[in-house]
Image 1 (tube, rainbow, N blue to C red):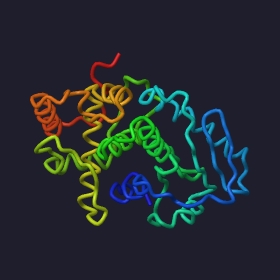
Image 2: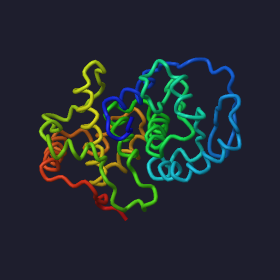
Image 3: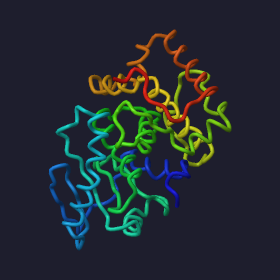
Image 4: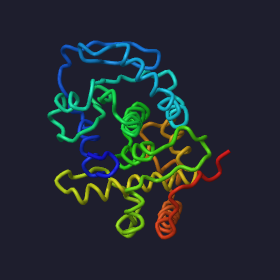
Length: 269
């Protein structure tokens, strides 16, 4: 399975446990404490190999934390690590057979194989950090932010260009009307029995968050959620004013009509 080319299926596997589903009692597991995080590994895994792999990944994750979740500098996340993708799949039978990783909201932990690709780690860590910052964040922001950070190049500085996910670009180029908003009511959930609708809501969420980032608004949203975790993300841009909401909607539609797919955030210094 190609992780970046099947958004509807990936959405299912990445959000299934976000509804509070506790996977299982983890028997036969060892727990490590690292400087960055807590790690749970299956018995028989080489702790040194796991530590090396996570230390290799962590500078990338730390960039995301510092730029988007700065208030969580002292937070040590829990990571449940599997020796390979096959082992992860055997241990996650309640998820689709092509699942690559997931965030378990009930345990506030990501479940991932040690050899999972960087985009998988970035996506799941986004879910984990956002849930710690604001557990009431709506679906569109949870998934939209995770999709944006999934493709985020941490080797660039914070004011550099960042690209939209390739499959999202295809949607915008081929069918922008499907992503337009008649109002500012963004997706709050998905129906997994409706794959087409699920895909559209996922893409809309990701494209809209990318749009907010290009405007420089994402920083204000993250700061607002830090100060008021139960607030609506858009409140920190529009302050609930109808005129400001309509203006934002119109500017988003204009963006869909004249999109940019690799741009730096406005007003960044």
